[in-house]
Image 1 (cartoon, one colour):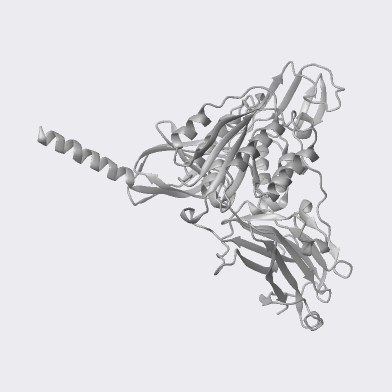
Image 2 (cartoon, one colour; image 1 turned 45 degrees about the vertical axis):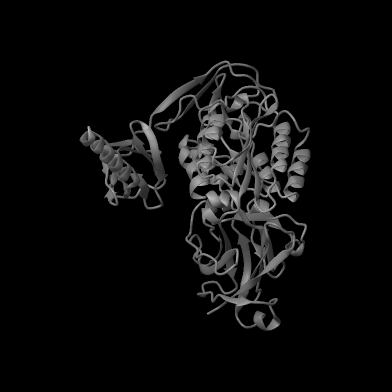
Length: 569
């Protein structure tokens, strides 16, 4: 008997030891010609359940780690390629399994999809289209859902061919014009607010994965650029971010220059982060019933719950036909209780978004942490059609709560009636982040990989101002940031709202520069400068100066960051 008990104990100890060990899978995804396949989706499965996932980089490289010891299956999928399934991959302790994947181009097939008994205004915004049958011929993407909502494309409506934009089927996007070149002789100063949001990238990816071009308003260039990590150095000392600048040849016009500005927020270890008072505000209206909406919301929030600590608190408010408190503010270590409340959520009813936001702020205020992070996280497809009487009233409410120290982050989900413009505005007014989550891997990026940046602000109202030297720069244009442009005087205006920087977040901005002497090789020498650009500097070879201003997260006073000057070599 004792021998049997000893064997059982040894077996348990061995199993616990193996569970605690981990390995990795690393490799490159290439096509049949040996070229790397960028942005391919890699999913790791065990017994049919997803255990991990990632996407390949520009060169097709990927890595999955840490992975518990065991046997796994792996799938690799990318638009235009045949899905690859590899079974029985063995992961050993403290070892990296190298696994390169070759993908074959899939054949393009034209299918006809018929959607019947639609209701106006599915296609027509102005209610001029009557009921009927819609058929669509389009390139089908391998693995795309057959019940996906109709998006932009070319359709046949009652026999006539019509071009349908995504906005015409319920999705709404902002309108802006790309920045033009400014002559330095007339406008030597450029000022803008930073933006760390990356919703545009994942939303555009969603359109492309479905086989459609995105609406113009969905493509915000600065968010496409800021989606990626550029490995900027961490700041030194107590500075909230490091400043990185360089000038090089413009890749799309060799006679022009490209000024690259990068800010890197200080990354704070999870154990050192201040306590959090979080309220999940979840849309459970009928429009959220699709698999890529509420079910994905629940999976995303489960990831965040696993990162919570005992000093953190979380409450859950939902809204549909009316709003309600599903979970009162609960300590972060009561994970089973929190997860059970999330699992019990179901979709149905209209959308009382306004009353839901008011209740969420009420719960956050009742549990306010003076030395902590107080934040409401809204998850929705943006379809606010019941509640607050106007957008301006909603924005004023969010701005007033921001001033009280309660920030708002917004997570967008789903297709068909997606309200991008509204959600971006709400996040801006609430001093929070705006993300679009199109799959479980994006949820992991937002709530696991970028946990600190998603929840913890280290600098707010961050502004950048550049003064170009007309002696050496003829004209310039800022790439993207069209809806973040500020007036010159806004830089020193303490009341002017600007962007926030979270723990570990980075900001990247690019200026295309037309030099006065085209073709001359110009190299930047980066130095600190503590005063305005002097007359001597203007005549001694300086291209210009870059200035930064920001507020502390818990105050309204500005701190000025030392400027950098750039010189000709």
